[in-house]
Image (cartoon, rainbow, N blue to C red; front, top):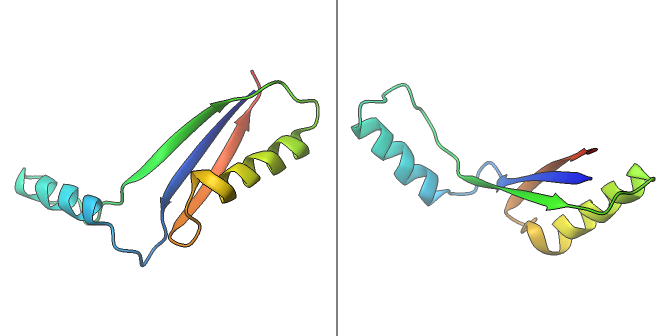
Length: 82
């Protein structure tokens, strides 16, 4: 079983790295880019679980406790069967 977790800053939170990338893309001629937000993707390989609800609960717990700073970041995940 595999979990793919996407973490990104909440809207309204300044993203200086995204701003820098957006400005650079503009200077490189990519004027169509209006905004850039930088995030991270975390991939977890998990032991197989018969109970997907428990697996999702455990992943949520991991995100809340360590993988995302829920004050300024939002996360979402998907669980893939192998």
